[in-house]
Length: 277
Length: 150
Image (cartoon, rainbow over all chains, first blue to last red; front, side):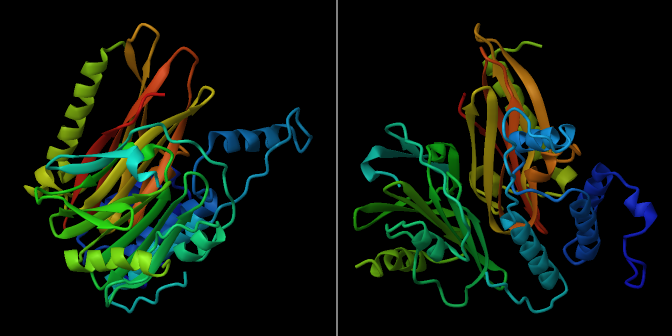
């Protein structure tokens, strides 16, 4: 697209339906090579969709119903109090940061990153040549929901009063934190993204509700390694060029994956426990 | 239309395989690695929960790096009645234009999660087959995960 061409805010584009815009985004992605990909065009359409109907982090049938009730009752108080919808901006921030990062990568500009358990013996593991997963030996209990947001995973863990050693203090040289995704409603899910050029490292901390039985970790046929540190068994597996480790500490599951060596992975694991000594 | 559970699962897997093998539609280039592991997907998960008759299907997918597209392309929700017969209740598609669709796919990120909800009926149990997909500029990969029954 000619860079001098008017931006997509005109009536023609505004008249498009959400579905048409989504399909255009898909076509822009699918019909372009990485070099040709026009992130600006995608951004414009995402912006327009966002203007029309701000994307919520999670679509909730109940919240949609509550909003409908609010409209049809014209502000009157219904039989049951209308729940106040708490706008959650976490995912919007994540999308925005992700898009910003992609643009920066695509145009070759410098990316300025934004600031951004289980009872061990209660779990069994299952793995094949192709994947790996945990299987509960007993039903996991549910927990009360929590609120609030934090800047990063360590501060969220501290703020939530989680004292278990879960997060590493050592990250391989060259990797920098580029994004943190925090979902601290139950079940807690937090993902940190580090990058070193075109290499990535992801660290995911979650409090589980039994859903880990349905999570599959990709692996190749390289034999799985069991690395013991403290009371936890850390499973280290390979997925082609990627090294992954996953373990449970009390009610929490920690998962690390990236283009790193086994030695670096072990150093990451060791660092989890260093600060808690 | 009523199907046997096994038939539905086989059909779902066939759909997934068709998606995988015909992934040119997604601009993907399947490689031998797809069979053993994945250059694009590090982890996938899907689970179902239920509050009253409201059924919730959660999914998540972790890419091996930052992906151009990552998320769920289709979610097939199945019901099982008291006699054990199964039926496809609803298909969720990320380009459907429905409100849930915006939750199904993430762009320019390495991780995506989301959920859809369904107003179920008493006397039925439900589960879903979730098609998870990730691609970057070099290709993509697909996995199908079945949830628990609720």
